[in-house]
Length: 312
Image 1: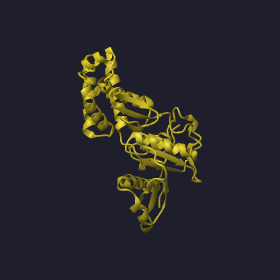
Image 2: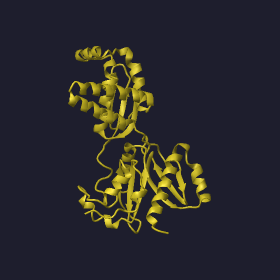
Image 3: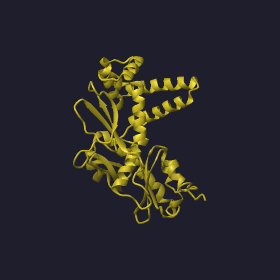
Image 4: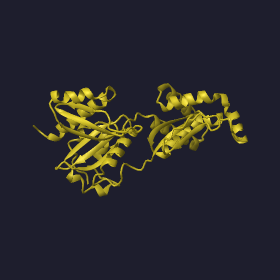
């Protein structure tokens, strides 16, 4: 049965992000994530196919709150962080099924290569990037990087078959430093380096498709998607640092939104009515790199509040 949409739906955009439902007493009922916030939140007032267990929750929803993120990957991390802090009643699992992993670049002469690891554990001669969510996706991204930048074939210790592959790929051990440099640039989200890798993969995919090797083309297309996941903007979870995080706050139309960061993880947000003079100190303490995020989400919070307030 289709129900009338909640008034908050019209105030949401099509960006990726997280949303939470509250009841009339202010208790959080459910936290979820979306590739498209408006479409996802609107779906709760539809047929709920595959989510029938939530039908009893819908009449209890009094207020919708949301945050927009810079990527689907960032939204996935934020959802996970929020669930790990407090799992609402109607959520079944804490933050989805993706496994946190890291990518390690080994530049040592005898063990050069890329690996996916579950703990950073940096060592001399290695660089570790992450964390990333989704072991399968990240391993697919590593396969894509190896396809374009085969660092493992620049090792000094290769088997006979590996030496044959290195010759076929035109790789020698003197290429190791250049390959490492490009891989580091890609995982640091350098635009030119990422574009080069994506372009190479796209050409290989199109060539495979033209040769009617559709399974191979599909595999490379999945690798492109995995690269996009790994290099997408993501700062909801950073390498852990002891203690609290920075003050992050945004203000719009009399509403102050404050974000909570612990041990490198943004894992909470709250909002309250606040005069601009009172909010000023919190806003001034917000690091410049967080200002745009905080302000756009404060504006969203104010827009949702107005939409749900009804006629004045």
